[in-house]
Amino acid sequence: MTTRTQREALRAQLLDTRRMKELAGDHPLMSLAFREREQALEGFIEALPLGNKEARCSMDPVRAGEAYERVAATVTETQEIQLPGVFKGMLLESWRFDFVTRDGHKISGKIDDELSPERAAELNREFFNLPAIATLDKTTVLFKNGRARTSHTLRDLKAAE
Image (cartoon, rainbow, N blue to C red; front, side, top):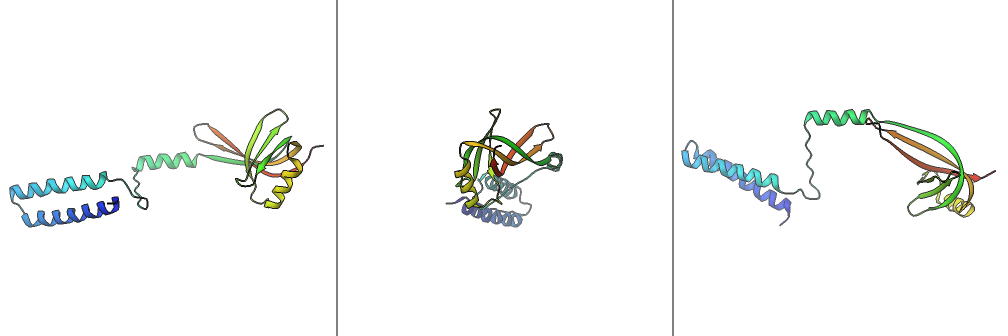
């Protein structure tokens, strides 16, 4: 039985229990028994794991406010840079590249979506493992806690002078 089916069966039992509780009214033993059964069914429903198509998310207002503040404090800066180095190639399947700067720093990242697959293959053949000047978009994300994350997007390559 799937969790969704289990949840629906438990909800049906919960509705039946609530109806029976109403019918029992103020009867001391019956109303207590139905109240306990109702609480137990609610606990079973909450304990069931969510199915693939079900979603449940809860966040108290204080934590939601804190999350919003963290996101609002994030600053993103993108700049176009040109770096000399050696082009190590690109993978057209994953749309990623590798480049090593003159000082030996390895840069990996994605290939610009504006670059056609034909042009990317041409650049790969022309500059593979050769000196080149890479035109990159360098994106830096600064988080509220002071941490920074940098990513690179390859826009073009030209021959090193």
